[in-house]
Length: 267
Image 1: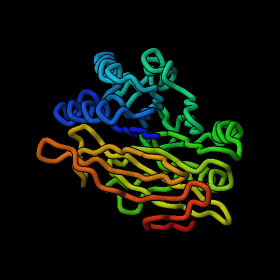
Image 2 (image 1 turned 180 degrees about the horizontal axis):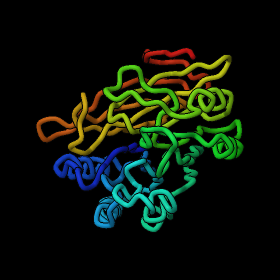
Image 3 (image 1 turned 90 degrees about the vertical axis):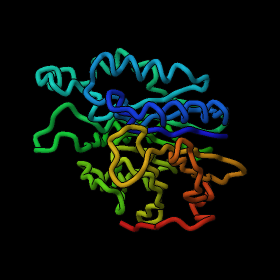
Image 4 (image 1 turned 180 degrees about the vertical axis):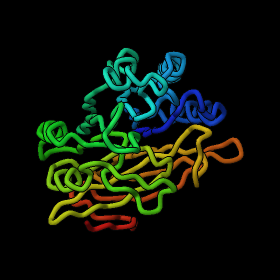
């Protein structure tokens, strides 16, 4: 079972070379599913959504997308306040999931907002009722993943530190649930860590960007492979016109115990 995990494509500021090579590689790997953790566009323009839609239409695998803060109409403040995701839904509402493939369940959660009462409206916000509803559809069997744009807990070594509203409470609820994996983006940095909360836990995985909006890392995306109850994260990093694979960690999905040691964070 192979899953391609993208985030922060930012069509309008996309890295065309990296996107082209990434598309060829994902088709060559014949992945079983594709997850896009938000920010498909740069300014939420129609032509940006159309370009993202065209690129994703080149894959045969089922696709789940969630919106990011850049997928709202950046320059249209009334629309951002009244119908922040109307345009996004017209293009990608049919990609909302869930995906159920070979014992793996992937569900989406919208952590982005068109506006907020705090200064940085781009930061994430978790609706705990929405999270509980997603968790309620995850039983004790199989592998369960949730995809959203914003990390619940900001990755310590990311070039961008983020503060997701209600993120700590969301992290506690996720750790106590049957969900083992949280797939996010936003920080433009590939990262994985096992987050422990009390007796529970989950693996938080972020993807890099395939745009020119780089921070501390080159363009990148993730390939997750599940085999014999072992989850392996391989980060694909773009350098010199090619993607180079590096293993970022392996975990037993039943116990969450690391097979190769990632950074462990206790909240």
